[in-house]
Length: 516
Image (cartoon, rainbow, N blue to C red; front, side, top):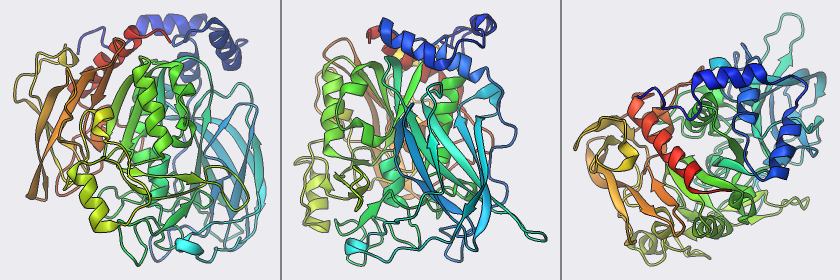
């Protein structure tokens, strides 16, 4: 990698950090950025990550029940997927048996390689044993727990993914137990990069309390039969049977294994990044204030309003980076909770794909579905294919393309194991679309399927890039405690300078091509 691979050279980073006084808060900088209509990469993210990181933020003592899903000794959830500074979020906690507990809240980032910063501690607090809900219509498990505490979000909390660590305070002679909660702090300022967490997919696969997800209804795995609610804890990472084996994910959805390596790397290099949840993208306004939009990891479930929002962003000049796989696969309508809170229940409403064969076949085999979404390939460049899962090497087919500048790659070079565990293929017929990488993914050596990574020009000097793999972020960084995923007897190798340089090239082009 060349010395200028980072958008902010180390010398400039140190100079900017030392020159920043502690009297200037991130809230003041954010307001200045909004007023001036520009991003402040050298101020917001760098200043935040210059703060002391936490030496102790991971789960140390984790226990899941006999079915391997929940941690009834302590577990919790938040009343909202995302919240803005100045608003509040309720935290519902249950302990069985009832216990006092404490909550330590961390913002996830780089922080000198430590990965998180402690923003506030709460407790001791009291937790009762709150009821496990009985299955409702379509096997819905919607908790109606009482709040254990309310977090008022201060004005100076920077947008980011915030993970809380719940820890029981044991009685004498007892062990303590831990689990996570997670939510996003969002903002509305102009930013270079908008990072959308894939929390719809986290919830679709969430099997709390006892194997109840979108996939576990008796009528079938792929149909519209099951509803799932955000009003419940996240069980152990839902893909642990064959993709990730890390019980330290309990309560944090899929952020830590599949998305955190990207956030860690972006903040390490001082990129001006803001964060949002899937539910924040039902209209395009937030994204139109940014230069690049990133879909990350496993981003399978989109409300159709998300599709049209991101399509509008592309048409208005926002660069789109699908650093993800199995993306925009299922139409996922939101509806309100039983208490009237918007966007808290989802279900699999039908396939994206228009009249493409993969969508027609899904509809015929697993429906009837109430919805059919547009052809996702006309937005992403490549599509969901069948089989959609497997593993393979990410093989370069167009080494002279600008995304490979500074990588030294040649035709046919491969990045081992980077494709998986789900991917995209079947490129769309879009003017100017190029296949920059492609090859074969295998389900454990059988059922081969072609995958393709694509890029095409947008209408206003922007571009749309599709990395075509859930595992792209694995090539960027290895945060503290990170466990590499694997699938179908194939796995990525971790940070790779070629993946890092390609991502720098993509982001530089995006930042330079559009004035937010």
